[in-house]
Image (cartoon, rainbow, N blue to C red; front, side):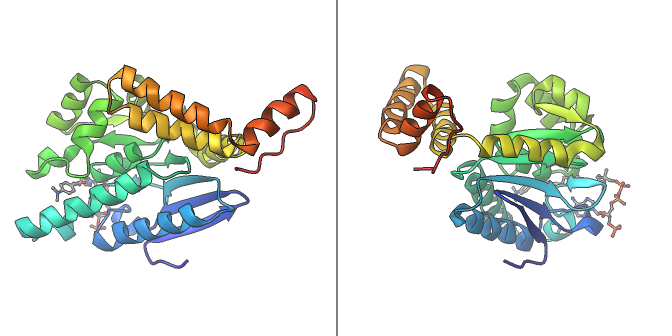
Length: 260
Ligand code: DAK
């Protein structure tokens, strides 16, 4: 597990993944996106990891976008391939069986804002800044931003962000519903780790199925989505965790989930 542009550190059941190109404000080029995909695939397969925190190396940026220098001379075919590659890795993160928390420590612009939106939960430092400035570069969001932003906030706010290219502070992002918490910069990692540990202490199958029900259900009408929830709810009654969780409650003892 060694990459140039992505760092992975472990804290018991928590893995912290940092995009590590601080000199370019962690901008995403082809290599960084590929490494991120590989790191996430390894963490998905690593049985001892329960929750992943994604952040940016250095003081200034989460990810300041797709790498403009890299994109400058792309041909239309290469641009399409770059976009598809980015969309694929972001979908991989969104669909991971483990929860991913974005610890947004600074600029989350363009592809960086889109990357944060592919995570399950966003926690922002007071220094975080969000925006989709692609239109100022003569392009448009290409890593799923037109879709995820409109689903996460509301279409009017998404359009304001995507049409104006304006940069918004963490409090604005909180008001939009783009992030769930804003915390002092020096507390960001502690808050995210505390949240991650809390999630890691829950029944892993319950957490995984919940993510699946929410993600799948968002693309369906509510009645069909209820069917997914009911089906997963039924399946969970075949797990050891369901027996253990309920027995531990009734026996007033500490629960010991096995994730099966
Ligand atoms: N790409 C490459 N380098 C970047 C960068 C980026 N996105 N953002 C910053 N850098 C580099 C700067 O060039 C500078 O490099 P040096 O000059 O030191 O070599 C270094 O990081 C520090 O940046 P600044 O000197 O500019 O730092 P400041 O504090 O003054 O300003 C800033 C910080 C974040 C406001 C500013 O750097 C900035 O505006 N950066 C660009 C932000 C941006 O526009 N992001 C969106 C990128 S476009 C698609 C696929 C993907 C996408 C779209 C379509 N298809 C193929 C369809 C996604 C597009 C994007 O994300």
